[in-house]
Structure formats: structure tokens, C-alpha cells
Image (cartoon, rainbow, N blue to C red; front, side, top):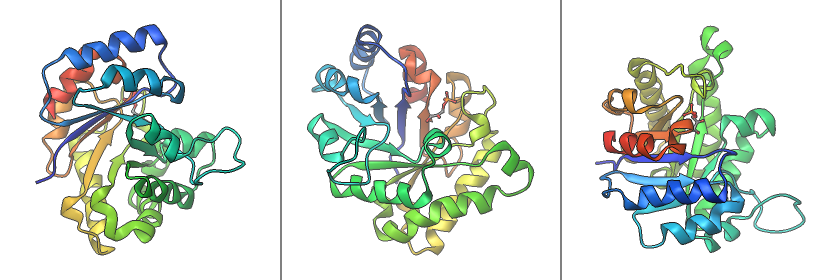
Length: 245
Ligand code: 13P
């Protein structure tokens, strides 16, 4: 049985004051049955670590370096993240792939680095609208996944995968539960074919998940929770989504 997860990706949002309000509300809420994670910007990890201490809400980062340490200006090492209580890290988000030219190989290397530090990488994949319209969804996602499957196949159950169609991110346009389920089933099959224990792998859906569409998405057999952007910035919405998982 896979435990569902709801992870909030704050992206480049927040301030000391709004974070404190949001995190205090999450901590004060009744404990969710799913695993709940918040992924804050790097500078706020210390604040979040302090405010989440002793709670059931886990802390994550939004990226990490593929290197252990060294002359990599601007990069953040997994060892630094664990010092601030991070148990999770998002890698390969489509915004990083698009704006920072992250390759599939780099994403896989980051996931490997995170695992080596005892963290859970949340590895993101997803197609653009153009790719979907050209009928390339499975080909694109298959390639994005393969680098990670090749490098980490047997450790796949320790990872979390996230399907985030680029056209559904921040657009208010959600994949229908059927569209999402189809891709999630494909992802699981791909993992199975590459020799991984696919039934143990959690696959989250991300892209305009809101309190009013979460339950329907999470009811799909291969959707094991969500990676939440905009709605994770509002405590009531994020808690409602966690309640649906
Ligand atoms: P939205 O929920 O704002 O569409 O963002 C999804 C996302 O990119 C989470 O990583």
C-alpha cells in the first residue's frame, strides 16, 4: 500500500511574515493521514525548520546541486539541506528544466545525490502543450524518466515521482482525472519495464490542483497525491487538499 503524499512547492514566494502565518496554520491543523511536505525557498529553510519542529509536516527544498561540494557558485548541496532539516527535495521541476536548461541526466544525478544524503527526491516530469498536441506525451515523459530509471532503477521505491503537465502549471487548466491517470499508469509501466518495483513507487500529480478538484484526481488508481504550487500558499486550501489525499 502506497502512502499518499501532498507536497507544497512554494516556488519563489513568501516572506518571513507570511511564511510564519502559513506554517503556524499548518502546524496547528489536525494531523493529516497523508504525508505532508512543504518545499520553501532556500533562505527560509531555517525559519521553516524552527516552526515545523515537532510537527508531522516535513520540510523540503526546491532544488539541489548534483555535486557534493566545491566551487559551484550559487548552488546548494544536499548536505546543507539536511543540516536544515530537509527530508525532501524537488528535482527536475519543469521551470528548472525550461529556465535553467536542466537535462534529464542532471536531474537523475541530483536525485542520486539526494538519496545518498538520506533524502527523498521528488523527481518531476511533464510535457508541454505543444508536445501533447503532437501526440508526443509518452515519448517525452519516457525519455525524461529513463535517465533516472537507468541510474536509480532498483532504488525507485525510495523516490517520489511527480507528473506535472507544463500546460497545467499555474494556468488554472488541470489535466482531467482521466488524462492524468493515463500518464500515471504509463509512468508506472515504464518503471516496471525497467525492472523497478513499480507498485511501490509513489507518483504525484501537479498542475492547478485546488481543493475542488483534488479528491477526483487523487481517487485515480495510479495517482498517489499531489505536488501543489499556488494553492500551497494558502493554508486553508493546502489543508483541504491534504484532507482529500
Ligand atoms: P500550480 O499548482 O500553481 O499549478 O503549480 C504546480 C507546480 O508546478 C508544483 O510544482
